[in-house]
Length: 148
Image (cartoon, rainbow, N blue to C red; front, top):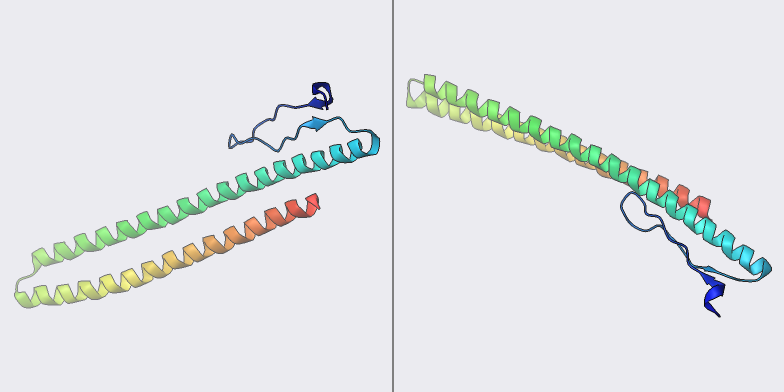
């Protein structure tokens, strides 16, 4: 095969800077050439659809991570406010019994808060994981269905 029979096209890149599927164009006669071109066109279209699906999935995942981070900040704020409130009450205590009572109440309150906060974080994490799996399955199943 001479150099004039093989033509290589330059690939574009997707939003991640990764090359899209590109195959060299090989001069094939008649029907075989047409089938090869159709197959390559389908592979390029599938590659573009998968890139778009991956981009959307990553974007959604970033939003989910942001929501999780905001919940962590909310929890940190609540814990700091509770600790400051506890210390303010300690300063007002008049006896060791008051300190012991306040400490016991604070420990119980902190335990209950931590349990509730962990439950919230677990639920958010499970929701994110479930929704992510559903999105990935939906997008890629659609892409593979169109490719087939």
